[in-house]
Image (cartoon, rainbow, N blue to C red):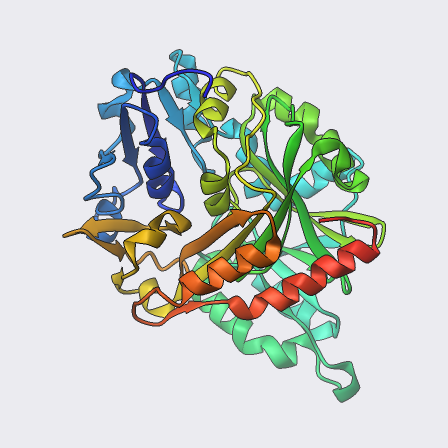
Length: 427
């Protein structure tokens, strides 16, 4: 570490995805760690108020205003807090976060238009206004299309529709129930919702440089990562000058924009690759999931990165291994019910939970209606196979209702890495 943080305090705020595990990690260095997450509504529920409660390493507080005068560093790993960050900065506070740059992720259509203006290559996309127009589009197409919306991810996660031309079945014939359900859940908003429609990119693989940026600058070393969506992630630690040139070009073209925002956060410009063609997919202007759970464990100097980055100084990460693997853990039960997860204490440092609390020393996941993912198993070292083996062994030791991990994705990821090699992209 560049300095001793034992006399410093840090506060972490997000919706519950990262704050508890990040607080656990930072508590090893900072003298005092506090966390907060949104909970205020007309009828608050304990599923919000109890996230991050019960830990001896850090303390949950109700809101930032109660403690802001006593905090040396504020950390916002996720999006949606741009105005809060800018207000703290105006008061002379040290803040690590995306600032208002999160709008480049939240407002997909405007972001795509902006990236087009920068000459960043993207796949074909369009905007459809309202659910009826989406029905009409689906009734005319057989090809696979990806449907996304702006801002409100709980309303709808991205999904695809596709017809079967040889049978004369349009995308509407096969997905009308899916669209009916979306229309019912959106209610009156369905008529005015903008749907971002992207054409599928067959034969492409996902790839990103998972890194951080301070004022548009990038470190000299970062993680080159790929994933099997929702199941697992693998990365190789590489010097920046050894990253795929097409990927680096995308990061370079956004550099000045990040500088203008005063950006200081993690960053993953998720892209699609086929041969030498690299197209920007979704720009992740925050800690992504994955690889955030792995980054928290694998980067040894997070306090330095946050502390100095908050004041505009870029610090290179120090990684604890050449390769890293993140294996996601799901439980359908936890989406709507509190879930207790049991595990041997010896593997605790390999685990990263979301929406968790401690009651009587036991780990509970508080239901958020945000999907089934509850945790990640992480491993890093000198070989991908070794990391996968460790994740597999740990996965067998987790117990809880409907607990599931995705070791089945490991051979798929290995095939992807082999394909990347044939395209001269080395892991």
